[in-house]
Amino acid sequence: MVHWSAEEKQLIAGLWGRLRVEECGAEALARLLIVYPWTQRFFSDFGNLSSPTAIIGNPKVRAHGKKVLTSFGEAIKNLDSIKGTYSKLSELHCDKLHVDPENFRLLGDILVIVLAAHFGKDFTPACQFAWQKLVGVVAHALAHKYH
Amino acid sequence: MLTAEDKKLIQQIWGKLGGAEEDIGAEALWRMFHSYPPTKTYFPHFDLSQGSDQIRGHGKKVVAALGTAIKNMDNLSQALSELSNLHAYNLRVDPPHFSLQFLSQCLQVVLATRLGKEYTPEVHSAVDKFMSAVAAVLAEKYR
Image (tube, rainbow over the protein chains, first blue to last red):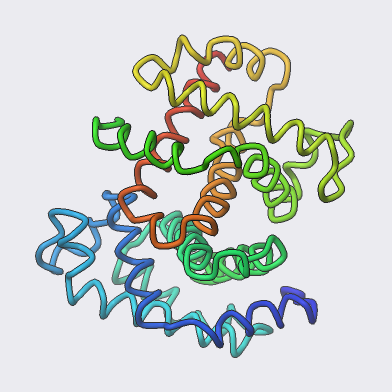
């Protein structure tokens, strides 16, 4: 089980409370598809992904980004049982979606950069540490049920 | 790999840093040591406390090297040849760490905190690609 210090919990919850989930989720997913274009392979039914502008404006990307970041909210509510929280999603990503877990790490790192751009100086090194840890734990949990 | 547009964006962004290079280098390193403790194993001889002269000095060096790379994006291999030798034969940083993934992530976080909205997806993509290209050159002579 992952140990979270009181400070880490506070840094995570504090930022989460100030986050616009729909906006940040959409931005994180869009950036994944732009910065690492090979990830588009999982979204062939999303319509127009032909340029950064198309990706950013794509309603399916926005909706899915919101879904993904909303699920992060579940992890944050259950920091002491993230593996349990993501158990079904892990099976889904392995058995139905066939996503290489390396992609979870890429999305996690992108989310951290989105937070940095949104929160500026408030995204302190201590904050980054807590969030890098969180995205790492989420990525690990999502990969946990792979077989 | 790097398109003409990527190169233009990188040069523009670098131009916006306006003399803050040393601060940026130091902050990127500090964030890297803080978020990825194993990276500290390559600096046992450093005072790794926040704001240390050694971190500032090394951050300045790293950013200066990146500046050189940016001035020579069409010929990274030659421009970074000395550094490439150093990293392969002396420093021998473990190659996965040496994909600069951690330094790249932390440098991008620093740029994003300073540039906010200006750190657009296009700029983000260009910088990420640039750091990959630099890492590839620095790892060229490993074996």
